[in-house]
Image (cartoon, rainbow, N blue to C red; front, side, top):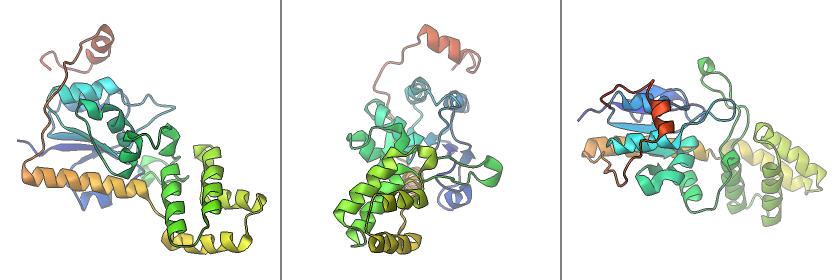
Length: 248
C-alpha cells in the first residue's frame, strides 16, 4: 500500500513542526474541490487540519464522502478538520483531539470557535487573532492553576465569545474586562501568567492527528471500510465531471 498521505495544513501548525512527526505531502488549507482532486491521486489517506471558509468556498461534505466511498481514509482535527469530522464521523471520517470531541458531543456548535485571521502562505500563515477554543482552554487552565476565580473565568470567556473572531486576542479581552470592573490584581496576575500558561489546543490536536497517522502507517492499520452507498446526484456530476477522470 502506498504511504502517500496528503495533509491540508495552515495556521494551526507550521509545516516544519509537522514534518518532525510525519513525512507527508503538506498542502495549503483545504478549499472546495481540493479533496476531490486529491482522490484522483489515490493517496493512502487524506488529513484535514485547516481549511478556508467565508471568502473561499469551504470543502464540501460530498467530496469527503466520495473519498471514503473509494476506500481512502479521511481524518480531521483542530480546525476545519474537526468540524467536518464531527459532522461525518457516522460515515467513517475519523476525528482526533479535544476540539473534535467537543463538536462531536455537542459542547461546541459554532464554526467561529476555530476561526482565526492569519497572514499569507509565504509568511507561514502567521496567526493574527486567537481561536476561541484556545481561549477556552487557556482560561480553564488559569482557573485550575488558581490564577482566575470561577466568576472571572466565565466573564472573560463571555467577553471573548461576544467578539468577532477577527478581533479575539487576550489584549482586547483584558481591556474589556477592566471596563467591566474586574479586580485589577486578578487581571494583572493572569497577564503575567499568560506568556507561559497560554494553551494552543489547535496545535496540540494537529500534532495528535499526525501522530495517529504515523502510528497507523507503521502498524499497517490505515484503512476505512465504506458503510454507505455514495449517491451520484446531478449536482455531484456537474461539480465532479471537470475534475475526475472518467474511470474514477
